[in-house]
Length: 554
Image (tube, rainbow, N blue to C red; front, side, top):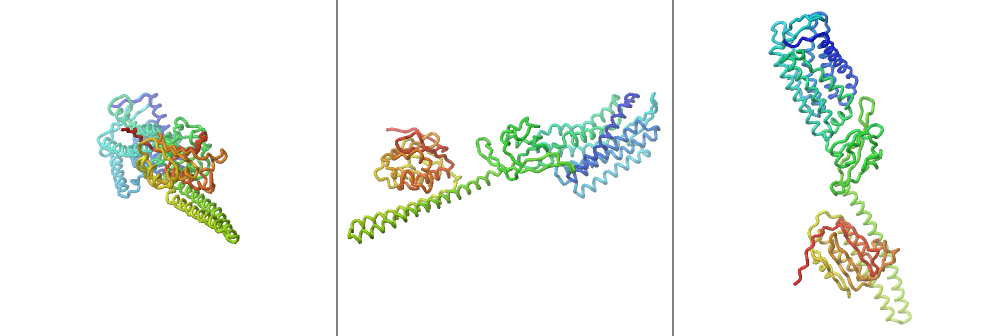
């Protein structure tokens, strides 16, 4: 026989199951505000069944006659078994599965429920579900319930089905990427009453009643009133890849998933802090379509920020920020933007070159005509020769721009290129005049071979037209340096060396250095001019993958 509660113990049980009744039924208003229809149906059904079940257990202690006590307990058995199917319906809907909509499963569930209810309701005929014994106590008659074989078969089946729902929830929590330990604990408390059921049956420590309504009450209070935002967060984003940050209505951090923490480490411990105080998130505005630049493991990446409010019923309870990795698209967009700007610079360069060249050609032709009229054939030939040279220079400039149009898009597939061989190949294919070349360093650099050679050719062309006599190309740890001993532009003109459309330091240098800069940038490199070098022009190109080889002398 199980323990027979005394007056004080019965009062505790009355209060416990009465509180469970109030908690379950009192949570219905809140549960009915859950936005997702199927989740709401499952949760409401679970609360109604558990609330009625808890009320029937209260009746087991407070009803005035044994028959009413037994009747109350029997009603609870019918309501209690219904909670299993409401629980499964809720778990399936909450986790985004479709089991609750499967007509075959629904019919099978209904048939199983009716069969078990039939066994319970016919218990007075076969007494194979429970046996009620009347025990006289100082506070009156207590009905001691002795569970029989059918009860344990139905209970085992119920807990097996409930375990399926628990597994579905735990899997959802595990995949969500949030700190779901509170929800896991709450869900575990829902299953904890099974332990009390076993203890009540096997010992006389506690009365032999079913304790499941107590666990459901705790679950309802937890998910609907204590952790409602996290409960919604897991359902809303648990199966969606991406980083999420949940904010309160006033813009304070309420929750975040592991993916968001990986992007913004300052989120750790940032709950209840304004989002503006979190490193990396201070620049977020209310505008849709913001793109954040984030460095992940040394790699710059780009994330599109989108937001939406989430609510219970008609009341907004917060905002969710989603960070979508759009690195590939954003890089293409920025490359297209850069390329369009570059094409505009090309066009400006062509306009500048054509305008100047046409003016020079026109003036030279006029000068040749004037010289002929005055009988000076030599002067006329000289003017026409200058005009022809200008035409040739204009042709070379257009050719340079055509080369840049071909090579001016960012490249992704780079390979190892022998540094010294690339410099010497460019030297052989360029008009070097009296310029002398020195190459220092030996090794390979990660580059696009064609673009690298065009870069060196442009650098050599610039040095030749910059009145240099010596050109030094040196391999460095992070790139290479190109130094000539030619004319150094005035300080105020240094920033114009790489601008298309400017003849700096002189007209003959033309487009060479702008081409060097573009061919470096399209390979992801940086380019800087040494402002402290006074004996010519020194340029350092960095950010280059370099594999140096020790020089071998013989």
